Amino acid sequence: MELSPLSSPSRTAAARRKLPLIIASLLVLAGCQTQAVTPAQPPAADDIQQQKMNSFARQFSGVLVRNAFAANSQGLVGSVDLKVKINRQNQLLSCDIRPKAQLAPVPALESLARQVCWDSLFPEMPAELFGPEGEQEIIAPMVFPILVDESTPERQRRLDAVEAYAQSRFFWAQTLGKQPVDSIGKAHVRFVANAQGQVQECLVNLDPVGERRDAFKLDSDLQARLTAQCKQINLRQMPGFKVGDKGLARGNVLVEYAPWKGGPQHN
Image 1 (cartoon, rainbow, N blue to C red):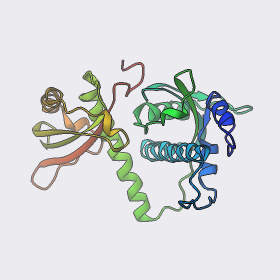
Image 2: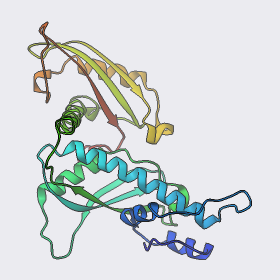
Image 3: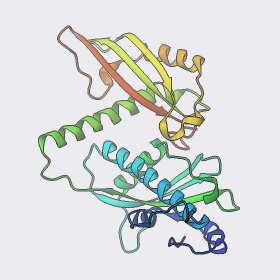
Image 4: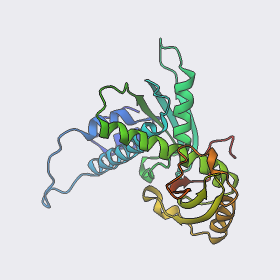
């Protein structure tokens, strides 16, 4: 999809029919200087459409950047072009890699990119950005940069993010990944365990996710099942398990969930 400022409704309609949506191009457009709109000069329909495209691109990329930063515990370096397909109901249908000409694939990097994609809860794409097909393909670059000259606070921030992501995936595999879910949300898990990792207390609360607040359903049965599962976990297997001065491990873990999370192998 050629993304440049549009000048007529007919070109807007034509652009909507072309796939894929190129996130990188959207971000370039989002950084351009725009002229202020006054009440005497209402924005044209094409300008409003472009603003929605830019806003979606910023939010979409922000989710990818945040999760890729936290998921890269191995310190992999490189970039891939992620190919994401979603439908008009904003359900994630596929996460693939678009091959790059003259560049050999890096399996570990591609596997990590797919994992991050399936783990991510993306913002809703505005309905008018879909063509008649009812699906949209998005091409978004994922960059895993070299980490050099990190200050102590920056290094600690990265380590904290990596640990939180790993713990979230651990709890997903042990609890939510084993449950059928029909909504989008996040589970806050608060636990107390002994030095052997046996859970003594566990509290699970379900809340909406900011990007997909309207898709949340408060499910007391799911909440009860998750609490029961949590009490059966051996937390010594959890990344970052630490025992405090009183011989107890206390912690909080956030786990996002959606029907498609984990990919086809989960379903």
